[in-house]
Image: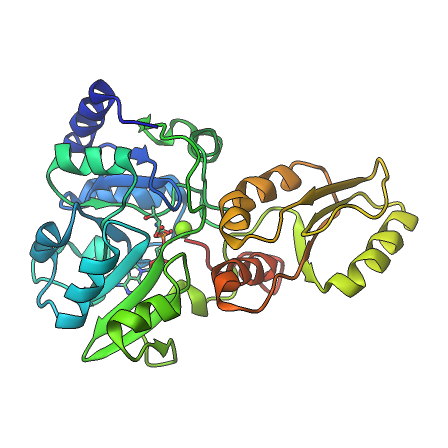
Length: 329
Ligand code: TXA
Ligand code: MG
C-alpha cells in the first residue's frame, strides 16, 4: 500500500506537536513519537502500559541519519547497515551523548533501524528526524500486523494510525548488538544468523554479559488464552482428551484438522516459514477470540529459517509465576 501524501503531512504535524502516530513497517506496526521530545516519548510508555526503563528502537531513514544518534560506528555495523538497511534489522550501538534518557532506558547504547515499508520511509523522509517506536501493542500483547489490530490495541491512545496494509514479514526485526568488537544476536528475526555471519563473521549468542534484550525475558507476545506448544505426535491425543473433557480448543497446526468438532477451532499455516511468519500474529489474534480454554500450537521445524517463529512461540507460551506476563515490550 502506497503512502498518501496528505496523511503523511498530517502525521508529521502530529509528531511535531508531541503526539503519537502508529505506522506500518515491514515487520510489525510501530507506535511512533519524536525521539528528541522526552514528553512525547513518555507518552509511548503510558499508551502501551509499558514500564519505564525498557529501551526503544529509534527509526531512521538510513545510515547517514543514524549517525547523530551514535558515539561511534564500528566498521562491522556499517557493513551490516549497508547490506540490510532498509530492512528488518535493528543494530544496537554506543549512543551519542545527547540522546534523551527515556529513549534508551538509561542504557549507554541505542537501538537503530531503517525500515523498508514505503509508508514508514515516506514518514521518516517527511519528518526528517528519528522516530522512537516500539511495536504498537499494549504491554504483554501480540504485536499488531494490521492497522485494525493497532486500533483494537490502542484505540484513542494514538492520535493517528497510518494504514499500510498487512505487514510483509509479520515478526519483529532481528536485533544485533555491535559493541566492543563483538557482534551479538539479541533477537532472531527475518535476517537470519547466517546472513549476519556472512557479513559480520562471528556472531555470538546473547549471554549474561550481553545488553538486556527481550530474548532473555520469560514471556512476551502472549495471547490472553493460555498457549502451549506441542509435538505433532502428541497433538491428536491432546485434542481428543480436551474435547472429551468438554473443553473448547483452538489449534494452530501445519497440517489439516484430523477431527472436526464445534468446540474445535483449527487453523493451518503451511510449510513455508515466510508465509507462516507473516500470518502468525493475525492467526493468534483470531484464535484468542475463539473463546477456547487453551490454544495448542504444533512445534515448528528446528532449522534456522524457523528460528524467529520458534522464539516467538516459546515466549507466547511462557507465563509468569501467577500467569502474569513478565516482559512484553
Ligand atoms: O520490528 C521491530 O523491531 C518493531 C518495529 C516497530 O520496528 N519494533 C519493536 O520494538 O519490536 P519493541 O520495543 O517492541 O522491541 C524492541 C526491543 C525491546 O524489547 C528492547 O528490549 C530492545 O529492542 N532494545 C531496544 N534498545 C535496546 C538496547 N539499547 N539494547 C538492547 N536491546 C534494546
Ligand atoms: Mg514489542
